[in-house]
Image (cartoon, rainbow, N blue to C red; front, side, top):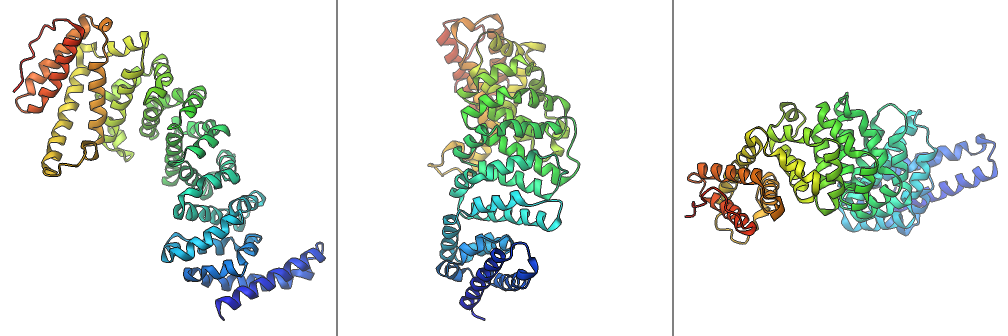
Length: 457
């Protein structure tokens, strides 16, 4: 049977089934035979999913409109939009996706999902396949994420995620689709914020502040929710919602409880406090005694954190970035509390800072050797991310001290800086750049630092 004939047969059987359903709405026996005939032809049409170059026939023969009106074609649509199949014929895939979007496929699929009962296995599978359709289309054409979210998908996902139901594959898939919608898209981030989605994410994540996920799948869902929250915090208005929703307190508790959520909580704090838009969060973090939590993590990478899949470099990058953000954003009393931390225990935190600096300076030197000759490669393209954050920490701390901040403790800390650099500068000649930075600070504030900066080559 030809594809064209198959589609025409489907159209006829679909029309006949609809006609009998309207004529005998209370007598299923009258349209049961047509229902079975329609199901048979739909099963036959699955073969079209193996021939994406013929997708244009579905559009030309107006079959897409008929397909969208039938719940039973969800499996077929899932196969038709399989990402590997779509890439086999870009032209045919574009035609199909255009027709589906013109028919408001997402809105119709959401309406179907709202009618389904997940206690019934077949209907739960229907929801899973529906989510697969949206994922396939979003991967093939990322630009449709905004339209999909606005057609009810965002609202349905949030509702499903916060539903008091046992964890299952559908909840995991919902968290994954939500993270995809929020990726690189300020429109969907704003929409989620307007729907109180930040509170929904925080409520769902609060379960993991004292308990680890029980399975690998549940851990994956937790990470998806954290990723979605990080994406949302890239929008300034959502940082205010995060602050009002006591997100900082939750992340701080996660850091203290030492569960698997701790690694991702660090990442969330980094996203929420970075840049000028993170100033309010930085001040609040100090007020809730966050310095007591973050500096032990700065001094040493916890062993348990390595078991969660996070690398030592990622941990140090996030911690250093958080401290750098506070150094840039804090004012008055909170700023003094932060700076005083560097003077505790004979300036041990300064020593740790230098330790990290030299560690990543060596990594940069090795990278320099590997790419020597590539003159047009910009430095940040190959530096380890941790060194970038570390550089921000050192630079922002040393250069952000205004004249009125200079006191005996700051000069003492600067002396420690110079002493440590003097100790290692023979092995690391590039450290003279940091000495220039310190010397610039000395000249800018007009004071006589009681150490000699004379290590220039």
